Length: 268
Image 1 (cartoon, rainbow, N blue to C red):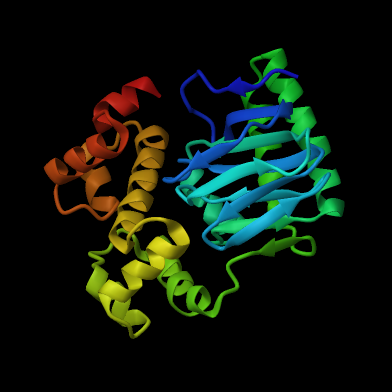
Image 2: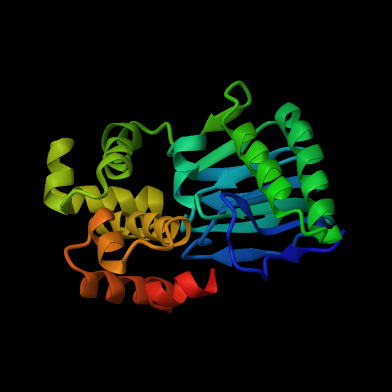
């Protein structure tokens, strides 16, 4: 099965940024993480993934889902390590944390992995066939995301009390009230610690500062609005996603994506 990377603009709620099977997994080092939620599962052999929340050995049918921008590295433990993988995007990409839970990483055990393997194979075949049925593929992608939230076999790896007590509540506040004038000081006061300490915890678990996470989430929401509401003015999108004015929004969007909001809307 070939490795497939998305080339068309994103115009469906959920789709694959990349997907592949039977991949001879080379060593990977990503100090800044990967910009999308991505999942890696062992097909044959054994490999090790190192992350800020632990080092995990993946035997056959076991997998790991990582949130965006979580630094990590891959390394094989056996002479041959083949994997299947998928990374996720879409106009509703910003809702993925609410679907699977705000975890930096989710471990998938062998039983759950066998179920996921069938879905990934099916979706990879759809992508390879390039039938043009984007809506069906989007539904299949959503089904795969739901599997990560199925509960009994998906285990959040961020069970550290520091994460649960300080980082997770702030993430939930950002996801709920991102349109409000949130600040690092205000967010840290919710969990009764200093902004500096909260930012250090965010860097430990999320590989970014508190403010960087807030901005990233707002940009994701802005992308969603730009595509799903094509008649909404840029200034209104800026206001609805927590930016003080349109010029600040445009400059921040360009730094994050390399293009302006208007260019992003035209491309998608």
